[in-house]
Every structure is written in structure tokens, then in C-alpha cells.
Image (cartoon, rainbow, N blue to C red; front, top):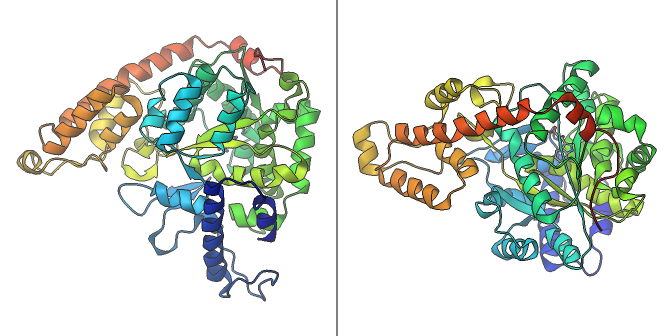
Length: 453
Ligand code: TRP
């Protein structure tokens, strides 16, 4: 607790950050009381019988709250996770109109529809990234993927589609971490399998259109041993985070293997430009921006907490909402449940059947009722998916009006979604076919990237 205060309550923090920190502090006090049964008093450790909740303070699921951590997402409402509450709980900031306008002004581009529609909804320090960029000080992007199987679904593409847009509009380098080590530690898979999934998933990522001259994709299993500077940063982080802290953040217990306990340091290291001397020539001070789904935030709260203590910059973040399962927004799409997901390998027929059979509908039970009362777009999965993939704002607005009024039936809405997804996935498959092993090799070779600072 004290450490948290001393590293964050520094002078000249923007008001929003102070407000967020206060909110978080109040929340931590409540958590403390819940866990220990005692009121928090600075400097007095809890006496005994400390009960550590399995998911840590950031992820309590008591009294109908949403559960969100790197391994679980479940919401108490059919509308899905309450993202405004999550912002308060995690102490991040909302991407508001002012920030949207600034992004447009600085980039000179209309904001991506993921930003306009609140799919990327929360951030940390994005204003600082823009301040620096305006002063011609560039930054780099970092995102990643845990390769747990060969099968990627459409939800997995969201951060990559958005990252590609950021790379294009800001013209900056990008590093993509493939955490095959993480998946080996967490799942019942062999090292060989995890590494193979890295290569297979990298093909899907490359198919999103990244520029090989500006993008470095790396497997932890390969790069950790090949890059002394990367490993030095891992060790620095490891020295400055205690077991107690990761227990609190990630809910680790005494029976978790030590690989899991030290893994967060490996996900932290790419946030520091000195981990990539071949790209940044040993510079320690190139700011990093991480686009990711909000469930990855615990890793980066930890990273931001240690960064100043090891003399490095805190990474900035842009957080996205989850991509809902076909069955409804209460949970996210999961590759381990084939009926919950549209895979990047699905045929047009499979897409059609899955949407028709499984997409949760916000429509009424009978056509008569639907015509009379209209459908609910807030819980309708087909409509939610269209907010991700139908770029045309006017068309989307018209669909919303018609569905809400009852003019558009559920079957018709599903048809629109099917006809949006089928060509999109077919095109992805086409682009993926063009990705050769040599191209993967190129993306994954440590080398200088092409950019000006
Ligand atoms: N842990 C992430 C996963 O399981 C992978 C990851 C590593 C990541 N570094 C990241 C995701 C940075 C987003 C941003 O998918």
C-alpha cells in the first residue's frame, strides 16, 4: 500500500490521475477490510488470518460484481461488463471526447471506428504520448498474443486491427510479443506445441497487414535467450516486485509454479525501449504505447508501478472492451468453446450456421411482438458484432433504428451480420495464404526497423 502511494503520489500529476488514485485508494481500503476484517491503518500490518481472495483485489466477484482478470471475464448483467465501473476500479481514465479530438488533431486522421464507438474506451497517459508526438518526439507500439492454440477467432483480431491503424497513422515501430512461455506455464501443452502456435498465429497477425519494415514479432522462447538487454530488463523487474505484490495483483497462491509467479516480469519487459537495442540503438527513453484488451491491465499496472523505481518510463495504454461470445455479452469469445466463436478458419457455411444458431438475440419471441415492441440492440450479439465490423456509421445507425422500432427482424439482422463476416473472413484467409514461412522468419528476425525519430 505504502509503496503504491510513494510511487504514484508525486507532484505535478494531472488532476484526473489524482482523482483516479483516490478512487483506487478508497477501493483498496474496502478490499483490505473485506480480506482482513480490519480497518486499514497506515503502517500497521493486518494482525493474522489474512484471507487472500483468489483473484486479487482487482477482480473481486462478490456481490454481483463483474469478474475481470487475465484469465477470466464474466459479467453480472446481460449487457456485459460495466466498463465505467471498471475504469474506477482499475484507476484508468475514460477516452472522452476531448481525447478523441486530440487524437484526430495530432494524427490528422478521423478516429478509427473502434475509438468513435467506445470499443477502445479507457487509457493511461495517452495525453502524454500525444504531447510528446506534437513535439516531434516519437513513440513505439507494443502488443501481444498468447498462442494457446492454432485456432484464432475474430475477437483476437481486434487489438491487431487497431494497432495496425495506429502504426499507419503515426508511422511508428511496433513490437509484438508472442508469449509461448506463458501458455506453456499455464496450459497442458508442450514447449514444441506452444512454439508452433506462435508461428501459426504470427501468420494470422501478419495477414492483418503490418509493415515488415516497421514490425518486430518475437517468441519469448526464442528472444529471451537471444537478447541480453531484454533479459536484463526482466531481471530488473523481478528484483523490484515481491511475491506478495503479484499475489495481490494476479491472485497467485503458494501452489502456483514459480514460472507463473515470475512471468509478469516477462510481459513487462517489452514496455521498455532498452529491451530492443537492435531497434532503438540502446535508447532507454522512447515512450511506449500498449493497445490491449482491458483484462491485460494488471500486467501493466505492475509495470507502471516498477518503471520509475528501475529508472525507466511508464508505458501508456489504450484499453479495449471484450469481444462478446456468440451466446451473449456476459462473457468473452473463447477459443476453447467452438460454439462461442467465429474462427478465422470458418467457412461461409459455418459462419452462417453459427450466427443463426447461437448468436444471442435481443429480439422478441414472436414476429408480432417484435413488430410491436422492437428489439434490444444493447444485448443483441449480432448488433454488437456489427459495431465492431460494420464501418459505415450511417448504415449502423439505420440498423439500430430499424431494429429498435421493430421494422427489422432478428433473422434479417443476422443476415446482415453473416454478409458482413463472410467476405471479411474470406479476405483474411486469402491474405493468410500469401504469408510464407520466409515472411514469418523476416518479421521474427531481430533487426533495425525503418523509422525516423
Ligand atoms: N498475455 C497476453 C495473452 O495471453 C499476451 C500479451 C503479451 C499481450 N504481451 C501483451 C497482450 C501486450 C496485449 C499487450 O494473450
